[in-house]
Amino acid sequence: MCGIVGYIGNKSAQGVLVSGLKRLEYRGYDSAGIATLGPRGAATVLRTKGKVQELVDLVTTHEKSDMIGIGHTRWATHGAPSKRNAHPHVAGNIHLVHNGIIENYQDLKVMLARHDYDFRSDTDTEVLAALIDYVARDADSLIDAVRSACEMVVGAYGIAVLDTRSPDEIVVARKGSPLVLGVGNGEVFIASDASALLGYTKQVIYLQDEELAICRTSGVELSDMASSTLEPTVETLEMDLEAVQKKGYDHFLLKEIHDQPDTVEATLRGRINPTVHTARLGGINMTAEELRDVRHIMIVGCGTAYYAGMLAKYYIEQLLGDVMVSVEVASELRYRSFAVQEGTVALIVSQSGETADTLACLMELKRRGVRTLGVVNAVGSTIAREVDGGVYVHVGAEISVASTKAFTSQVVAMILFALTAADARGMSPERRSELIDELELLPSEIEKVLAAHEKEVKAVAKNYMQYDHALYVGRDTLMPVALEGALKLKEVSYIHAEGYPAGELKHGPISLIDDRFFEVFYLLDNWLYEKSQSNLIEMNARGAHAIVVTDTARKVEAETVLRVSTKLDLLRPLVFNIISQLLAYYLAVQRDTDVDQPRNLAKSVTVE
Ligand code: F6R
Image (tube, rainbow, N blue to C red):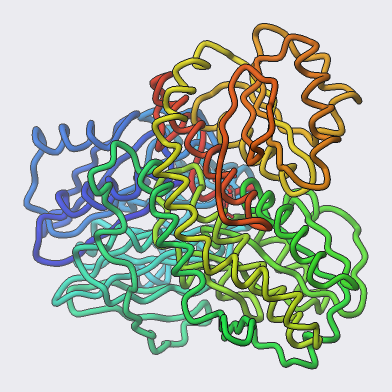
């Protein structure tokens, strides 16, 4: 979603800002802008509807040696994508970039119009800029003005503010929308996402909710809403520059699919003991007794994280037979009047750790006294900080908007949690050993599947690129794989795709089958083979253009059969899902879409 950058130091601010914005492009945006100040406060504001590259072109014709500035990539909420609505917004002396939503902006706008403020955009952000400018009339300093304005707004914000009267400082504030400050030698970098700081500094300060900071060349002054000074905690960023580069791949999506042998290994590192068949999770902060008392595991997430939860549910149920497992879409759960029982543990699943709906559920569950554990990738993110404990999935930066490596590792992390609980509950090692052995094998099996099938899937994609509709089906553990496969396809290739449990076909979706559709049918040669096979026969009888992804050596009737051979048994769904990821990728390439930044999508959905 929207991205913020800021800089004060001895370099050209325009250069630092546009390179930071380029790093944030992956989050999804529709317009971009920067504002810089000269030594006497002369402002240069450059904005564009479109890509950051257009901003780069503007900078070459409006080059300034200014050493302080702020920048933004906007993902439209209030008002259409346009230059007029792009940030930074200007009101009087104030220049402002903002992530989040000001819910009471209409009331504030009416009040400010009475004080002669005119508004040129449709945004809530311009109202906030005017509000800061208005309260600055009676404030002693920019930070006091920002603090007073923040007290008057309802909503969420991460903001960076310039005042032309004080061209040696940037004031930042956060409530519900992340901001991180990078501390260099005589310079401070500001970003909504740490990846924008890579290559400049690894020393970072994560701003907490309701904190503000003044950034100057002399350093950072941190304070809270009550004006008390706070001691900043400087942390070292674990990410490195390599993680945000394509490493020779055409797209981040393909690179991240290929990252998976390594990222699964990273998720497992130090967490399993293959000799005694146990898993150990350092960060869950639960005693063996507390793990024994678990009666209900509630998994909460959105999109791909939700589907990871759906798949993990099968494994958790197999391991912890007496524990109820429910999987919830966060945007629904947050408004439901659901009951929680004694012994509930909530697994909050999120790659970014910033998804607004997931975060809202987390806060509600905490309010109700439920123990919450994060299954999060982004270190230091809001969800990671708010949960009672958790498991970092450690897949590194996921740049492509479509999530791939995070999905696989989220499932692995939830299996590790179930194994840890199974051990605490005294379950026999035999029950755990098969899964532990398979987890150990998973990285190399993913590698083999990629090596054996990538060319084949690419060729299949060529044969199916003309279809505009797809139906993905599977049973049991392959049902969530079908749903996730359909999601991946629609988001990156824009082919309309639906995912269904195979057993549901006869209850409606089979009527869709015609020559405009192709079908992806996942078929495991297990105890459900005959039943799944009959679903396939029913589809074929209606003229299906089916691609069957299967592990069977038996004869399969279908237009295309992709036979996946692997040593895995229980974890086969995870390697079948790799085939889905490749298929979505190559179909998107065939259809020439913006693979890494599909239209209308944002990487981290920080608004409802
Ligand atoms: C799909 C995708 C989204 C995210 C969802 C949750 O490829 O990326 O569906 O999975 O927006 O995001 P996180 O995991 O960051 O909470």
